[in-house]
Image (cartoon, rainbow, N blue to C red; front, side):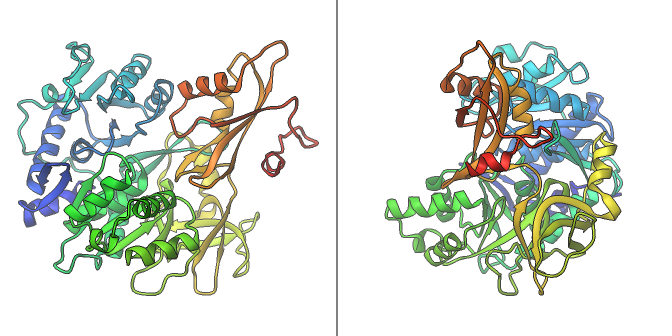
Length: 524
């Protein structure tokens, strides 16, 4: 028996009345959060969800997320977290590919109508006919969503369910979570992460942060990365529940809100991508904020998702008086694989050394180890590596060669075992810490009636690291403006994906075999 919900349940026995979750003026103890999760688990069981079934969760950083996440796990089911910015077409793909039987979805806002998008997706996925809507506290649930059939408001779904539940027995190798990621060869793939993967990664992540308390043993982490993202999910939500700490949820990243929370909630820990650090530093200086008074309890700041410029790291550390630690991981590695440890000096520009019981190697194209200091593909093995890609045995076999997970990232290991990520083998764009996969955009853009050929690449951006740019060849006899095509793309893709830059060309550079030379486009 091993169930990921144990990271929450252990503190119900130890310190039930301790604060577990803060969202604005809402506060939940471990006992209250666990009781809510138990109601969800009871409702799922009553609706026919059984061990091994898949249940999706489409929700921003709200108290709903952990309550439902753990409720799904307690019921023995697998959680399928979805990006809240996905469009109906994208949601439908994920539901269909994951064989999801039910979906919990936040109602959303007029600017981001999540439930409307989910309802449209469910309509075309016969296997998923249960949609539970999570209403906004300040927005009455739209009556159209309570039609007594496939769409159910959360209050009705869990109404009358008892706050106690006996967690369904699951095994260490059962799939706890399916996190969707993409490669360059097609649609997103679901990485199956087991209960063992997630529990051990949460425990090791917690151990890395255990000494960063406020002096009294209290841990509080501010969560600005989305909880559907692997890093916030494991290295913050699960790790800090394992520590018995407090999760302070911020629905979106805003420097003012984060700095306010650091003071009012006595934040000890924060994880952000480099653009967040840049934004906070810039905001504090423009507003004349004395951060020595604002972030008095901040003990550890963690950066991931993209390389942190050494100058930015040094500037932030001096200004805030806090150490920044860089780490590395992927959805397929639960996610943390390496980390700069607190008990020894960091090496700026590196992502540290492998985690406990994790091995990292750098190999050449023949999967042979390269010499120390030489670049090659980063490969990983250990307790953190996924079971495989759901329903994709060929992709799994390609990624898991010779007992090692092949990351597609190019890295260098130094003589002390510190890893530096120097390039990406996969044709991926990293926009503000979010992965954008050109192949997906290209395939959809080719369905536009005026697009004959398209190549999507990343171009340098001072704020985001990379921005998305599309080079487009129009079909003969058609016409479309940059603004028109950009608007069309905005309707097709999540907000972080669509190309901000579009350049029309009469032809694209190609190799002798007809392959578009994206490297040449980037140089140009």
